[in-house]
Every structure is written in C-alpha cells, then in structure tokens.
Length: 255
Image (cartoon, rainbow, N blue to C red; front, top):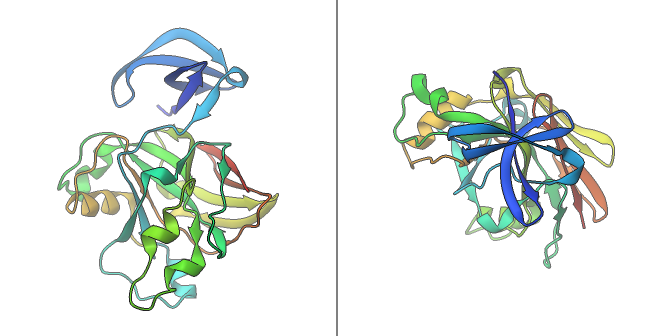
C-alpha cells in the first residue's frame, strides 16, 4: 500500500508521520522498522516539513540516462559512476538554496532519489528492492564551471558539495513502480526537464545491488539516480521545483 512519509517540526519537536491530504498523521517508533501510527493529527499548514529522512550519505549518479549521455556523446558506462554529496549540502523543502561566494554558473538537476530502508551489503539484484523503502525528489545543485576548471583534477565534490546544494523531499513515497515515474523540473513556472525514469542505464535494482557491493547502505541513505536533458542555469531570485507524480513537488528558492 502506498504511503507518503514525512518528517516535520511541531514547535521545537521533530516528528514523523504520513501525509493524508492536507493533514499529517503522527507515527511513533522508527520509520524504517516497526513504526506504529497514532491518533494525533496535525493540519499540514501548522507544521514545517523537513527533509523526509536524515541520510548518512547521499550517493549521486553520473551518466545514468541514455538521452543525456547520447546528447553529450558520453560512452556507455560499464558500471555505475557516482559521487557523494556532502552532509552540509542537505536542504529542507521550501528552504533557500544559497549562491556560493565563488563565481560560476549554478545549475539545477532534477532527480529521483532512492531511499534505503534496510541495511544493504552485497545484495543480489533480485533482492535489491527488498532493501528500498521508497522514493523522493531531489535537486543535485552544481556549480558547473568548477567541475573541469583544473585539467588535473575533476572537482565533483566541490562543485556539488556547497551548503544547501542538495534539497530533498517533500515526502518519501512507498509502493511506487519507479519505471513508471516521470521527473519534471520547473524553473520560474517553465518546465525545463520532463523525462522518464525508465530511460535509466542502470535500474533501481542494479544501482542498489552494485553500489551495495562497494559500500554498505544504511536506512535513510539516498541514491540520486542521475539526471537527463534539460539541465540549466539558475539566477538568484529564481524558484526551482522538482515534481514527480506520486511523490509531490520539491520547491526551493535560489538566492
């Protein structure tokens, strides 16, 4: 059964629960292990939604969509190509992406995020989905000019690791078929990205299985599936939204 899980702030207390229309039902326990629902209901308008999980790590894929890889004439990777987003980059829904002090073109990258729900080490592809809790929206914000500025060293971590450069949310949705999802990125009301998740080179099952053979994945960790065509620059004062039907809309300002 599909659910939309959220973390939210109620006064000074951080809680978690499920979104039910314009209301949030509070749950107790551990979101990933034996959570129990309560009768406490909060109007959505009275709480502040946070990132739906607190990841130990966020893994971000490169060159995982055929359309973008073909457009950029990139070779087909033999294995997933990925980097890590720094914890200081994590950002709540509706909070502000901040322009770094350095110069350079800041771009949005709307992506699907896979949320791990069960500790996952060297898992076979056939069992990989058993370790997936659900899916969320993400924006893999990047200072594009930094990536290859130094010919001797590709600066993935710096380009993608600035404060506020990894918005996540607004929910983790369970019970979805990722192959049927479509990612849309909307900049100032204009749709800039509109691409099917089914175009991934490595499926959700393959990503979880192959990455788990490199590093243990823990509940709350997030794998960003990579992005496709339509990536573009943001100017300060912009509003960027990543929308996936069934998950919702992740909205942030860029200032």
